[in-house]
Image (cartoon, rainbow, N blue to C red; front, side):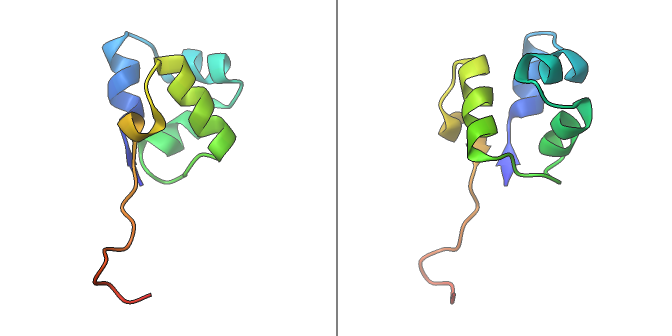
Length: 71
């Protein structure tokens, strides 16, 4: 899943450590989310969206199966 966490974080001049503290997670968690190696829990996704005052859909881009793809 792609996301705009790094872009939003940098836009307000915040480093990973400070964002992690604000969200009560590790800096490694923020790094993994930003690089797409980790998809946050729904609870954390809501916390991130609340922090940046954006909807989840504005931050996280779900790349699910297309209508024509087989399951």
